[in-house]
Image (cartoon, rainbow, N blue to C red; front, side, top):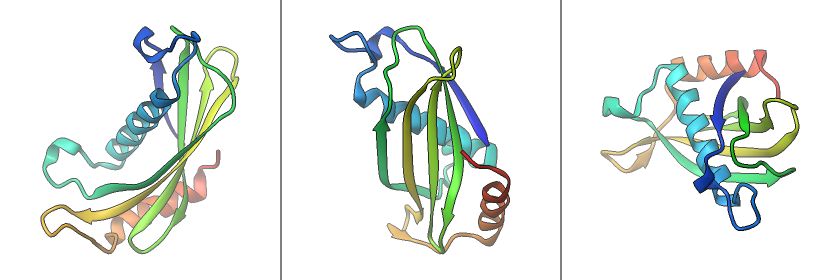
Length: 135
């Protein structure tokens, strides 16, 4: 399971003193980028093959300024042109569940502006991860 760690910044909180709901989508995006980099894909390489088709976040608890969060990412479902990842956000010190998310990622060719069949080597990587990792 891939883990990303983040510290809640003051600008990510709202007038109620907790992390604003929009900030969680930023955390999940950052965790996905780190996950892709662990797979060997880099956004700066110029041949990024992914596009986000859907993202959800269910809020289970509250996070606050200066707390340290762990975002776990695991593969749930693999299709021919897309795959689904699950995210779990917990507070590092207590293990308190803060949020759960899901994202559907599509393999995409930005030059042709069309979806593409997932490369076999990527599909095999994702299958290995899905078999080993559970949230």
